[in-house]
Length: 290
Length: 68
Image (cartoon, rainbow over all chains, first blue to last red; front, top):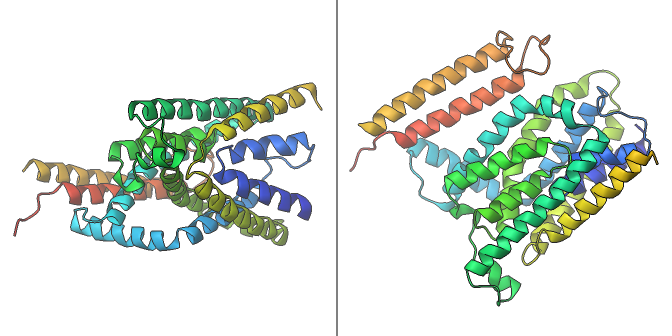
């Protein structure tokens, strides 16, 4: 992998990890469309993805640094006391409950899913599925807005009638967490399905995005840290990979800032339409061998 | 009393998870692993350690608290 390719992949991973458009799907489809010679199955590609994930996790930790301090403190306080008293304590337990199903399904199913689905055409097809899911989440949300009789209000007022991440039920947190496992399929967006799950649980768009990003951090960081020893095997071009990771971190930081602002009043629809269009075009190009 | 029974069950579950974690870490357990030739399965071991911690936390929530 050249430096230019590493930088491009870092930018792509950092941006698409948090946008609801599937980073894994893009990482599988785009190198194939560009006829780049490196393969996802190449042993040196895993350390590269590891560094990119650590860059993304670092950006998320930086954005939510004060919240994470409160969450970690809240976790230990609530865990030792055996009772939840404050909002950070409740959020820490919601994140724990949400992380468990994703962790179990991720550890046991990731390899099988990669073997079955990590081909460019399948990833392109699942990008279309991801787009349909995003539009479906928004369809259900609009029905909920209709039931809440807020359809005539402004978007900001509509959003204010929905809840905060700290107040969803533990069952909803587990369901949102389980949704993350869908993202093991290349083409299905982790942030997309968790934001959608959050919307179904009655969260505001911005809060659904915040919960999604907080839920993602331990999983992304753990996935990265577990693979760190592979970085020190021979033949890994550390400088190029590190440059890609730094760019991934910058892209993830800017993406998260943009999305948190966008979701004050924005919806998932544009990303759904993008995924359907990108999936159809990619599938056609890959099938035609362009 | 019901809460204490549930807490005891969760502690037992945590012990079971720790045993499974150790077995995966030393490569004794080879169930649902991507590379059966590997002698250690640290990802699985970390997962089961996490589940053990979560079970202990749940046990502490479930046990009956003394009222002051």
